[in-house]
Image (cartoon, rainbow, N blue to C red; front, side, top):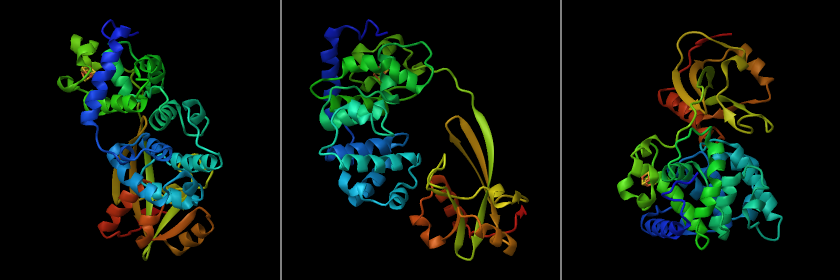
Length: 355
Ligand code: SF4
């Protein structure tokens, strides 16, 4: 697979040197880079899965101020963990992190190798390699979407890739050849940083790239088209939700701990789950995409009737939360935002629905 540009082993030391020198000059400051520990690396890696770094930083700082190491996180209550994670999305990561901390705190010392870290729920090959290389200097390559893009361009990979995880598998051997055995943590972070800031999606900034001399895609002039993926089928779905207000309280549904999605999290209830149907204009309409599905979310403002209240009182998953307490509720980012938008416009309720 490697092209003639990069496959010659005698070029690898020069590529490592150029990349590490570039990283030393251009690394972006991040709290987990300023003070490195196994705990801080694990927390940052789990938070950064599927989430942008700028979003993660304030969450990371709040989290590590509240729980600075594995033993302290191990003693935390799940409800508080979920509340501090609220807004970051992909909430199974928070539960996995808590379970991981409880397991690690029970060991005489944290695991060191990527193979050992893989044993924990929620720690895949990418995260395990990041923890082992950054916190314990194990020479294993991290292959995330940024690294796949850099390698696909360096090596001129023009065949269509099935998806992100098969692409990561395909490039793992190549990445392991390149990783610097003396500074694997910095090397891996440098590759990811290069992909995030220079060898970006769309048009890369090859003029600023430390690897330009070895890049097949730059030589061929088709870097912006790489990597190529088989296109996925996209779907659309509609969801109707109920913004229910009673004085200064909002009705939320708390998903049970074993729920398939958003377990333990609160959300704006789906209209049909309250025995209601849409009627009239929604107070808000918002679109969002999760994976390959684009959802149109219509939010209807509902003034509850006495019969509704009696019926909902029997539903153990429903709870009333004071508007002043919403900040501390374990709500997902979009649901928190939508409630905030509605309340900032007065949070008025009209029936807006048919029983
Ligand atoms: S030269 Fe351009 S395409 Fe090649 S790795 Fe660098 S930024 Fe990416």
